[in-house]
Length: 295
Ligand SMILES: [Zn+2]
Image 1 (cartoon, rainbow, N blue to C red):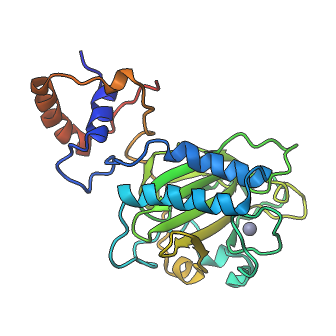
Image 2 (tube, protein in one colour):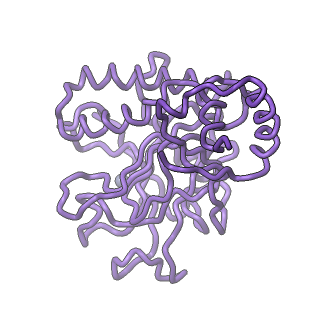
Image 3 (spheres, rainbow, N blue to C red):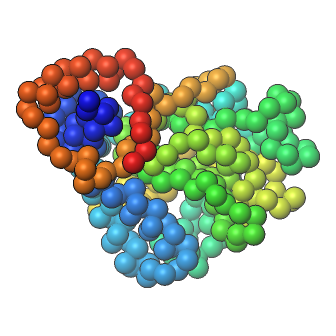
């Protein structure tokens, strides 16, 4: 019996899907997720020169763009969902004035002082991450359609790292990267496809500054557009947030995390089996959430 896992792997590797818009058609380098996380850590630990980090970033984005070409016309606010369930732009810090991109350099960790992002607050007087008005944790949801590139789930309060637990998503329609930070909990995995309103995690206080009492509980949200040379350029997305639709309840991503590749899973089955399997898969694929086995 051929496993679903196997079929999916093959499906993706061989690029045999008939409909290119199907979300699992990542035919780029499967290592991009590992490389992207590795890059983020290297920048943070300053084990990579900014110039080298810049080149690696471009190379990774080339892979991502190959797998998910940016649309001819990039979307702005269209179709955007507000990143906190049940909330809206009035929760954005400073009425949207908290954005400062001067001096920002993603690749140089020694540069500080910029804040090319918006902080979106919940009401949490006792800093337990529970929203005082709603009496529950607040879901962070994906603002657009995209693929999760990297996550951090195990931030420790002894760590000096600023972002805490985070999620990076490549946005298919805007052709850039969303960075969501300070989660108490992250529920997605690298390689997972997310739609607007899908839950990424919950608002928290992780991160070197965010955990301090002087900081109110919030989501830090940044959007980096990609320039023609694939270098990142922060965008003040407050206007988008103002037009974003609010979802009261988050949804779950339709597809499970991307499967890992093993030599074994790449073994080729007979064409006959392949054909019949693909017919079945094409139908199931759209209707059902596939079950995954971690390998
Ligand atoms: Zn912030």
